[in-house]
Image (cartoon, rainbow, N blue to C red; front, top):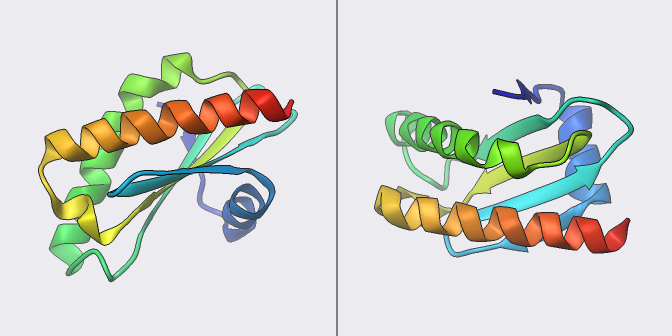
Length: 112
């Protein structure tokens, strides 16, 4: 898997300086940087649920993101933010993530 983002400065730069695509259960922020590595970060707030629920959602998102990394250009930073609807079925989460992922990459490509 690509390196995970951990520094808050990376999250802030991606969210504030990139493009955004939203679906009912997730929001994907994308930003292009001069780097040869893809980096992905996850944000799951307490609005999603208790610690057990948040960690389950993060595990599901990490698994689903692996499927989309090959279609992501190098030098892309992505932040996947789970919304309270993310506790729905994993099928819905997968569908929403795929749509938001593709939409954010299209918006990012138009911006270049």
